[in-house]
Each structure stands twice: as C-alpha cells, then as structure tokens.
Image (spheres, rainbow, N blue to C red):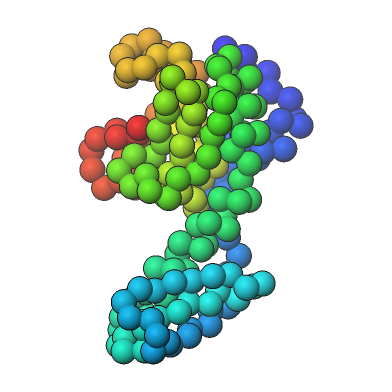
Length: 186
C-alpha cells in the first residue's frame, strides 16, 4: 500500500478532512398558479429558486413541497462542486485500483450509497452523500472502485477496500446514517 501522498493531492481534493460538502443557501420565490393542477416544479433563476405550485394548495402542503424542492436543489448545487472524476482518479492511483470510465451523481439511489457496473466500468454515487464528511465520500468511491476488481463482497474484496485507511470509520458512519445495522453500501 502506498501511504506516501503528495501534499498537492491532499490539498487539491481536501481528502481525509472532516468538512461536509455543502451548498450555499439561495432565495425562494413561490408562484401560485391556477393553471397548475397537481404538480410542483422548481427552477433556478440566478440565485433565486422559483417554485411553482397549484393555487389550491394549503400553506402546510406549500411548506412541505418548498422544503423538498430546496433540499433537492441544495443537493444538486453541492454535487456540482465535487469533481467525482478527479476524486476517483486520485483515489484509484493512490490505492492501485482501476479508474472508472464514468462516475456521476445519482438522485435516484435511495437504498444504496453507490453502485458500480463492472461491465461498463461506470459508478453512480448517491446524492445522499452530500453533506457527509469527505472521508466518507472517499470511502464509498474506493468501495465502488474495488468492484472493478472483485464483483462480490468476499475476503478479496475487503482486502482491497481496506487499503483505504478510514474504511472501518466510514462504514460505522454510514451504518449510523442509514438507520440500520446492515452495511448496504452498494
């Protein structure tokens, strides 16, 4: 295992620090529409999130829908600030792993933290990781990179994954965040 990491690699991606990945807040503008029957939509216009809702919607429903749209857009903005391709490249090099053909964020990964498709060498990362410490995100990337070498979760897989120094700590963090005792990491 290569533990001799250059200072530029660590500062470039801020690997191993405890800071969460967060989005800056933005203003919200609510537009009640008589034409809109059931759906809620939202679009960013500069630094303003415009949320369109049906005119019949109650204040409680409005508040719930606005909170959901704000949550989604904060995640979307935060994911744009993280260059997954560079992180995966540096981590793959550091831990002698294959580099994926593609790695991207996925909003619809709700029951797993990451997903690797070895046949196409693609990795998808759950946007639920936004706001987690960067060392947790890095662990999930290493976990998925390990699947480019080993498809299952047998001893060979865990030997590769444990090259990452914070594997056990990150697994504990993810278990606590998932609310169960399973390591449902992919």
